[in-house]
Length: 410
Ligand SMILES: Cc1cc2nc3c(=O)[nH]c(=O)nc-3n(C[C@H](O)[C@H](O)[C@H](O)COP(=O)(O)OP(=O)(O)OC[C@H]3O[C@@H](n4cnc5c(N)ncnc54)[C@H](O)[C@@H]3O)c2cc1C
Image 1 (tube, rainbow, N blue to C red):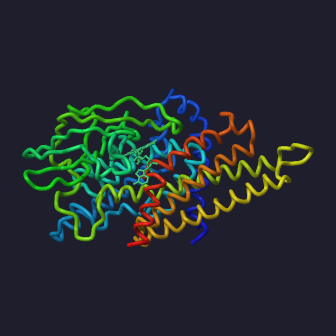
Image 2: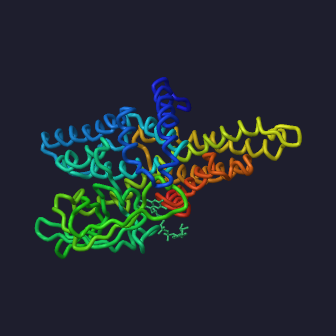
Image 3: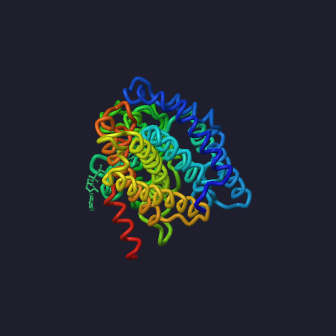
């Protein structure tokens, strides 16, 4: 369980070669905003065969829906949606890909994650027609997706504070509201927008609604300026009497099953996001540990390598401990996903630990490299700026603690 098999190791090595050979040289231009990351995303899909592997996830879901229809069941939502299976049916391959990308550019990892978050919401909740029309092109990176839950007044309390509404008028949904800090939104072709959906006098329910760029009443801001993840465009979305066909409602308006967690589709996607972010953080930790060991062994001060100073050696020992723990958590998450036993406790626990350790590892790596670590010529200062996002996005550290506490106290 704690070692990669031959296929996984081979995949890791081709992913590393791509990230070091193709992604890394592009990072300065991406960070400067001189080029957008989407051509590179398409190259990733093509060069590593990722697009075909991802499309296969959508096609598996289509086959399930066809089977359910043949058996006279409703396949509109829930059940075995294939979303937990991962690339090539192996969740560890998804983790390896994200880890390798984030060794070089966590921001680019976010670009991929946002598109997948959008696509997998459609795969899990959409009809066969919606999957064919929207999810498959997203999974092949022919189009770009965004996943919009956060609002100016609703971040950690995304469900309680949500103001965005979608009112059913015949065969149309009319959306009004505002979303913010949405990855990919400045350029996304398709956005899954969470809204309080109201039909007649029935109580409103929070559901994802698919909105296409170019729909009247939909506006996206240019990218926001931010601390890190400069290669991942982030923006706000405004919806003003934005009308979309009723079939763009992902899932149904039926009440959630008894005992189902508050948050439904959003929580499913958040749990999946929390389950893959640890692998992204692992990439940061791994790169920082490797670079720090190398530097400590070669950089001499006071006539000795830095590694011979206990203060530095102990820092490296703690970084190695974090690396081992983070790697084990990523393996455990993949094991849980394979057994369909992924729960909010494990996902939150892993995300919290790995995010905290990624920030610490990046800060320690900079310290060990001294002034050179602070300079943009080395990747460490970018890794530190990008790492901080993982303590906020996908739910803050405090929200992960709350989820873990809720689970253990239930
Ligand atoms: C780069 C980036 C990309 C993002 N991409 C997306 C995206 O694609 N889609 C999307 O929907 N969102 C996205 N987000 C938004 C992100 O999920 C939110 O920023 C996050 O959930 C926190 O919400 P908030 O910013 O409103 O902070 P707030 O909820 O205002 O929290 C502020 C502080 O208060 C703390 N706090 C809040 N409530 C409690 C409590 N009950 N107990 C203790 N402490 C509490 C928080 O932990 C935090 O430290 C992104 C954010 C960033 C930075």
